Image 1 (cartoon, rainbow, N blue to C red):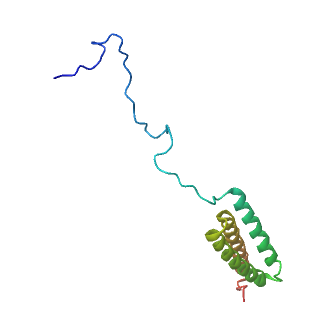
Image 2 (cartoon, rainbow, N blue to C red; image 1 turned 90 degrees about the vertical axis):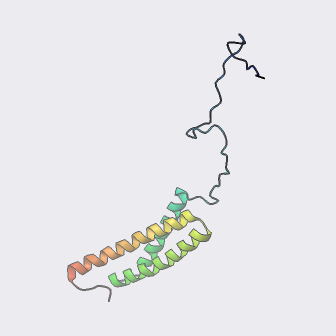
Length: 130
């Protein structure tokens, strides 16, 4: 027994409809099939800038305590260690953007201190930190 399917040769009023296609995913047609997980505390540019500004002020205040190159560098190293400890706590438990800004600016402050030591050492031939 054969079941006749409607078609243009059997039904003159039959309109051919294209078969539905599965979208490629390039242009999603609806909600995702799996849940989308969002970051509870996303890193924002404002947070990174705030952390960077606070770290710069922190390093500046500690750097001003130094009376010569050696004390400036040791105060900067000490302040940077405290700032990085704070950045680790912020990245783990607080605002990761602020922690990232603190870490970036602290690394930059240490780089400046290292460059000043290198220039002085190259110029005088004497190690300036002790």
